[in-house]
Amino acid sequence: MSAPRALKLLAQDAEDLAVISAALQDAVARVEDIHFEKKAHQLTIAFNRYCWERHDKGTRVRSGLQLGCVFDLKARAVPKEDPQAVLELLALAFEPGEAPGGRISLAFAGGADLVAEVECIDVALADVGEPWAAPHKPKHAA
Image (cartoon, rainbow, N blue to C red; front, side, top):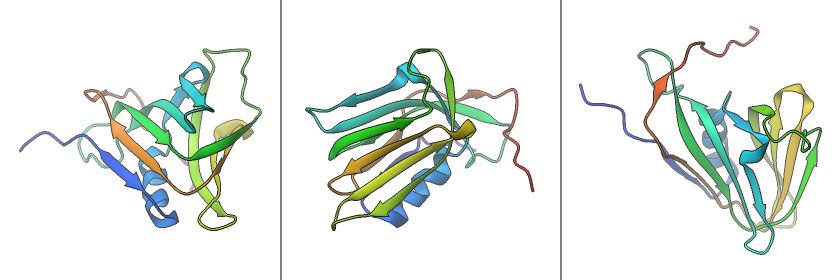
């Protein structure tokens, strides 16, 4: 049996974004790994992603999420004063605005969130490292 391939996904509509959201559920990132480049219109976040798609032992992998065409970013309850603080991603969602734009929200556990005002949905997710064993599988209330 061959090793699983690195995940590489692109989203250009809300359905695609839902797939990326599912792949990133329970991913964790440090505040210092969130970078918004206003002039480049890009939001980039480095995550340790739980590999839900793997059927063997629980693993995590370093992954990069990039949102393009971002012209504004708002944060709520993100502890910017603590760059080492860890945020656990719950979901990404798209709220349509003036077509093809709108808002992409990233909801984190504990009530933190990021809201990116986007010209259109232009999102990429890619694994950038080798998976490692995760000591705990994320748990959710039934």
